[in-house]
Length: 49
Image (cartoon, rainbow, N blue to C red; front, top):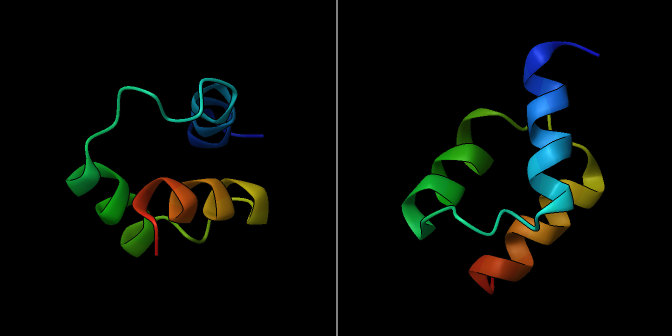
């Protein structure tokens, strides 16, 4: 697990609590190569896609 994966795992534990909508959208668009399916689902739920 690299640093990015570790960071996103920690953020998943906090349910991406402090992230803005724009930040979450950017994350979905640019980091799907690193995000797990559960993280993507959680972000989409927060964005109500």
